[in-house]
Image (cartoon, rainbow, N blue to C red; front, top):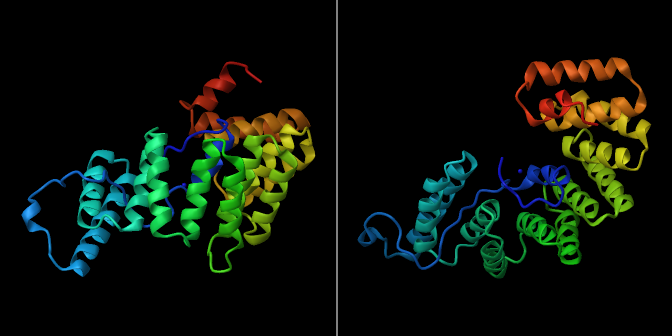
Length: 268
């Protein structure tokens, strides 16, 4: 989903990252000439679309690797070849959102949506963006479209994102329901289990939070953020053995992380 997605809450937004770039798409700035010689453009429309597809896939690859400058060049070229290639506008929107260009990202999402209105990946990603803009009602409508699509292969992504969005809105009961629905689709899905642990902890249901964290650790690797949550849960439940283990992992594997600094500062 690392990648920058506009944050709703510092903890909740990280769960959304799970699905941010789970598609093969690209991004560009419409109306600008691509790098290189424009006289090399193919004249056959099918060749144009193929060139757009190739450049989009290259752009997304560079974007996922963090090479944003090269990614932009490739996506500019993709849209130059075919301005009606929806995946390019879809990925451009994701890139712009990551770069903090929210207004432009919204315009690109709308462009992609106009070109491809029946795409569950787009529903999911556009809804994530809308939630970041606090347009909760429309966001949940699109999440619902995504996870209700019987052909959508990863409904747990949209259900988890929907849970994070409800969490951002302050509707913790509904967020728990969405996280559980995601787990019903995909038992052991890490982001949903962390959401379950985080919300139960916020509701002071510490035993349920600890159970969700234990389930997460059964099939997922900890990160500094999940270890920070685990330590808070351990302190709340009084489980000194689990606390010592989580602190050891945090200090041993992530000694320079923000979570390690948080722990060393004595913060709660």
